[in-house]
Image (cartoon, rainbow, N blue to C red; front, side):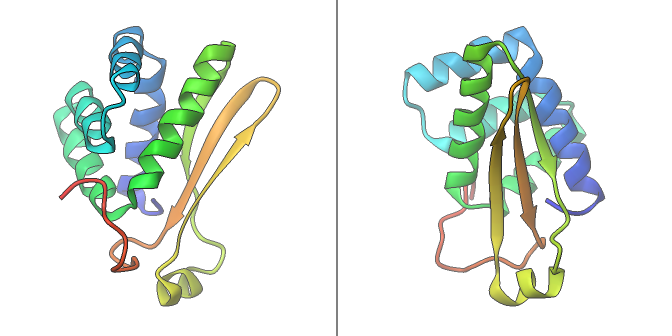
Length: 134
């Protein structure tokens, strides 16, 4: 998540995770132990249509653990009544990221918020992992 579309997607995700109707639906899916693609479908359904399409494209490139990490970080923040953000971070060394087909996501749990940072070079990903959506 490191181009212009990525920034629109993460801004929309951050907004969606703060909306009460989306929160209720996410909690239901979590309680049901739904698969990652169910969370992606829920989020894309709640987003504006053009953003939902971009989300599908982004998540189709990312490993399944990305969604699981984002959902668990959000649930931690929500349970504590803290702010939650998803942020796209341009890789410090994009050529190295592309060469090694690296995807990085980190979680910062702070006093007043939880943030998930996602870095990758679009279309340059390891072929061995299973993407979130087909």
